[in-house]
Amino acid sequence: MFVYKKLAYILYAFLVLFVIQPNLLFGVDENSDFDLNFQKADVQGTFVLYDVEQNKFEIYNNARSIKRYSPASTFKITNSLIGLATGTLKDVEELVPYIGPDNPFIPEWKRDMGLREAIKLFNVPIYQELARRIGLKQMKQHIVLLNYGNENIGEHIDRFWLDGTLQISALEQVLFLTKLAQKILPYSDKTQQSIHDILLLEQKKDLRLYGKTGWQNAPNEGIGWFVGWLEKSNKLYIFALNIDIKSSLDAKKRVELSRACLVSAGLLLN
Image (tube, rainbow, N blue to C red):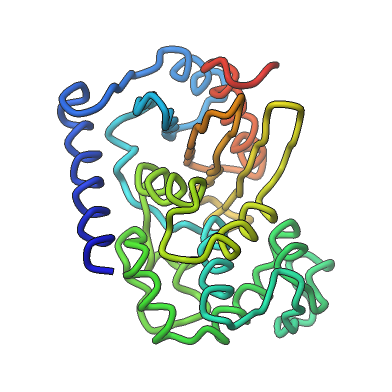
């Protein structure tokens, strides 16, 4: 655990350093096409793309890429991992009881469901119950083990990824997802593959797109996320976007803008 955590700190220190001196350690481009995409979308934010094989980053808004925000529903990735790794759930199909409001934000939430379905429906109460079952002690241990963001979950087990206690930057999201995508996190291959399975969004002959959105403070103003990775022609690309959401109309831009940047990078077709 110590070696893994030390390496993670060293790598993130390098990532912060390249924001200050971009070409010192890695291949880093401030992509002008990304800039144009953000102008067209008329939002403030950042997009980070990491080509694992080439060890090269393309970034829009270097400074913002290291700024931490609440992970919102992108934390469902980590919550799922920890739930499986601790044995709190035996698999992604095991039902988690719905313990939430009688009139939830999304009516379809109001029933027991497994993680495969819950993550697709953005089911907050299901993931809050999973966190309660994991417990504060185990959750803290695993957040530190994963070197996840600021590693601060406070004392409210079912709110910390929503209320801003836990925070993470776009670059840290990329660092974390790079390990998950390659299945080199300190968990079993089976556990990590289960998360791959529930994050798969699109599959074609030579392409697989994995990802998860998030919206802190939904349905009001807040921070919007889309994070994930792309497997194309046996190559791996990790990405993370966050934007300021000023209205509900901005919410759909999380995926649209990310896809536009992936198109600009030559990884997706229009």
